[in-house]
Image 1 (tube, helix red, strand yellow):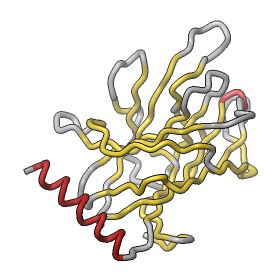
Image 2 (image 1 turned 90 degrees about the vertical axis):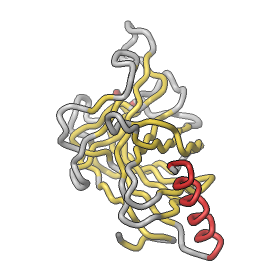
Image 3 (image 1 turned 180 degrees about the vertical axis):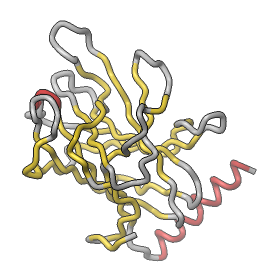
Length: 211
C-alpha cells in the first residue's frame, strides 16, 4: 500500500497501453450490427480491510468515440460465487456521473491508436472491502450507444486475469488468455472514528451472513 492524496492506495494496477476489453452496457461494433453489451470485472483481495472512497481507472474509446456530453459509469462490487470463484452477488453498486477524464498524452497500441484517458471520482457512498475475501470489481460505461468504452489492461497487478459477460456467453467466464488485469487504483479513506465504525459494522454484517 502507498499513501495517496487524501488516502491510501490499496490496489495499484498501472495501465499497460496495449489494449483492453469493452466494458459498456450499450454499444455497436459497427453500423451494420445490432446494439450489444459486455461487462468486465477484475478480482480483488486485500490483506487488510479498507473503506474505499475514491477510484482511479484508465480506459479508451474504440474508434475514438469520445462522448461529447454527459457520461455515466456504473461501479459494482461482487462477491465470489462458491462454485467457480467468478462474480456472484452484487454487494455494492454506485453510479459515477461525469468522472474526471484526462488525456494522458499516450495512445493505445491497437487499431486506430485511440487516446488513453485517466478517470477519477469520489464515490458517492464508501465501498467496504473485508480482508482476505475475494471480490470482483466491475466498471462499465452506461447507456451511450454512440460510444464504445474499453477498460485498459494492466501488467502490474497479480496477473490473475479478468472475468467477462456478454450476450454471447450469457454468464460470467474467465478471459482468455490470463495475462493481464484491469487498470485501476482503489484509494482508501482516511480513518476518522466514523469510518472505522462503518468498517467494523460492515465486516460484522458480512460475517453474520456467512454464519
